[in-house]
Image 1 (cartoon, rainbow, N blue to C red):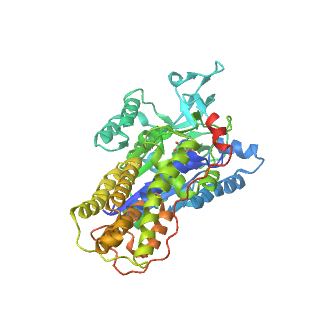
Image 2 (spheres, helix red, strand yellow; image 1 turned 90 degrees about the vertical axis):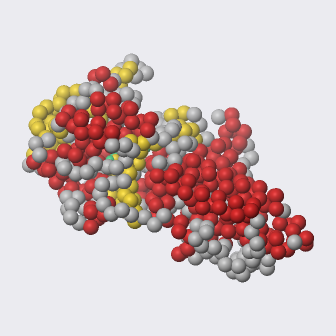
Image 3 (cartoon, rainbow, N blue to C red; image 1 turned 180 degrees about the vertical axis):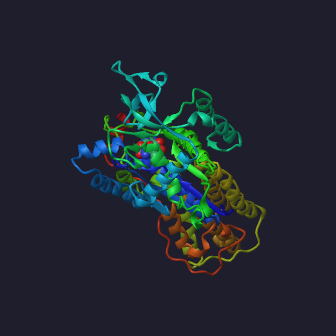
Length: 522
Ligand code: MSP
């Protein structure tokens, strides 16, 4: 793995369903991180894609009256559309029905077999098709109708069939050592849960199914298809060229820096996956981060409740960048959070329109009016001016720490704190009053502010690429001068540069008549 390389992945999404806000959220977090790392000069590979095999998908295809391949081709497109609609900057989009993946997962299987990690036995136990997961009797819970369900509430069925097993039980010690190496599981609070699962009754894992066909055939035993999670997890390797471990992609990007997942699928990524890899002689991931779940106006999101949040509708109603900002700012990343229209509008109007938008608008308008629309000269800087500019450089350093730990909300909070500080500086310096009394000082103040805005826009790009780009356009900052190496004091605006007429960047959301009260009462 080369030093400046950074490889990060989203889970691959089941194509039984159309995308909802949960899917958009996981990929958005990765997108912000990928953009941050690129702006910081790293060579990034950002992967997303779709999980297309297994019984759940097969059943959905059947219900849709379609052949599975035609069904997955159609459904996978919705996730590609989401990628465009959300302005995701993924470098690759993998599908588990692709040849490159099938080859890779079959080779991983052979490698495990060669290393004596797989044996043929038979499975008798519980299975949940919805979760595509095996459950021990002790994990089941009492469902609302008295029937036993999976701990997730998903229905279960009794399964008895021949099955290949992976010798997971032999990997307890290596897994615990791996966690002890530090930083592997984030947030820290989730580490205990993973560790106690591994320290508990760690049984061998069934890794093949019979009785249906929609999966990758087990090499040399076509009655079996691979367990969909072994198949799916391997996508992360397929996308870097595995089994060709000598190729450039693999050598550059493996081991992966970060698998971003939701808390519901942490066990698969932090236990099964590193065990498969170590057993096959492949290095395990450097880090797995589990984020929390969204509820909708206080309620669990589910198809049966009919309260799915459609990301396409959100974008249409509020605009893309406000949605991206809200999702990453509202909830401490790693915790569960609640989506409400009121909170969305609150963030949009107060943080973006009133604070950030207003700062940009008022400063650029003053420059347009009082400095002939050109970046004004910077005279002698006072302590207060220097202090404000220094905070910009500090902000970058702090944001690096936040992004490394996936604390997106903290990074945004800091960013907005500096916006607030810049607004206070405007009020305090009152450049409009200086126009007559001390025009030179007015020009310095406006220059400092334009400079602060340039930096705030550069640092806003990972989360709000389009809006930040438009602010930089208004300052005529060329696209080649928007990376973090151009943050103050490394680069500066040139006095005298002509600026275009300012245009508002962050619109206020005007509540439609009746809607607010309707939602407040809901
Ligand atoms: N196909 C598997 C992943 C295989 S990865 C090798 C899968 N797919 S999924 O489509 O069901 O879910 C993908 C992601 O969406 C998960 O990380 C899950 O946590 C996330 N979300 C689904 N609903 C969510 C919310 N309500 N809130 C936040 N994220 C949620 O699992």
